[in-house]
Length: 437
Image 1 (spheres, rainbow, N blue to C red):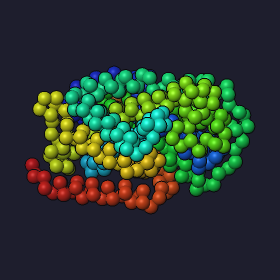
Image 2: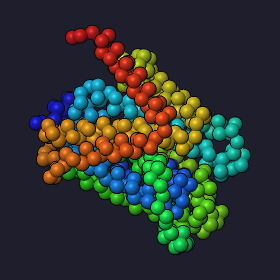
Image 3: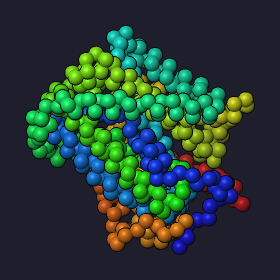
Image 4: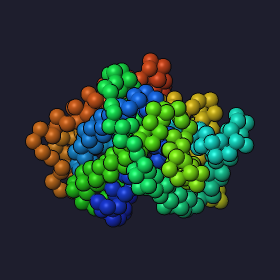
């Protein structure tokens, strides 16, 4: 069975992304500010067994990305997981996938904004208080809203600038720090309880997600049946190795005290072998990475509100376009406002977990879509990525997503469920009110 015919506007896109560029895009979307703080949060949960959570998380991601590869090689439309789910389950399924993506994005961005304010507070005592935290949050989101309202090119230029430099401090941390690691702190490991390990994987998943963002420009990928699988495996391998090295270096230098430095663990570790300049470098790197993530997200995610306003799922005001700059100004302002509120009333760790709950629900839908696409033998631009028993992998992926979701607290699950119930009600109400052609 063939995939849906590409819309006329989709055919105008140029398929220029190959394996290196798509893999780089995935790594860029995945490696963000979270890894600057997560080593301490995981160490606080698991102690010396923290690296185990990285292995478990990486294994789960292998199953997930294999499922995405199966779907991505069969559906080459722009939209990534949204397109996979819509092709497999129809318009309502696609809408729910879009809502989950939006929920994931806005919670993640709010958490990163809060982390950025905490990092700046660690850099200067002047900002280590609640009023200064409030000022940083408003300044960052206000300035980025202004930049993006003035034009998409301004937003894209800001993304490129921060992307170029955000990985350098991490490479320096690993390259220099590995020579100062104490073997006893790295090799000593005790088996943690299943509950602690599960909760840690739920938290750590925040550092691995990002593939769903990088796969959105699927309509611009060359030979997607080969490029998508190769790129996501290459990117996952690079990311996993980098994350493990970061955790091992931090743990091998700070030992049992790693979990105590929740705000800036890598900066504290760097200070032990590079002194004050090392601490400043990692704090600056964390700030740049956080700002880069926020900049990239605000360039794209508010467009979901714009699309929902355009399609009358939200008030039409959300689809307003600035008369002079031709940008979705109301959507951008609304998105940044919600981000500011969330980042001021909650912490990075709580928002990261809530974001992960939403992304796991999205992964569950995407794995289900992969099963459906394989079963129906949907095909896009050539022979799809396939192997014997391929349909079993997304089934396992769906089960893993539910298993990790079971580690979430009742309130965290209830919030996501409530959003989906409200979104579903809006969808069906809008469908009934829409005039039939």
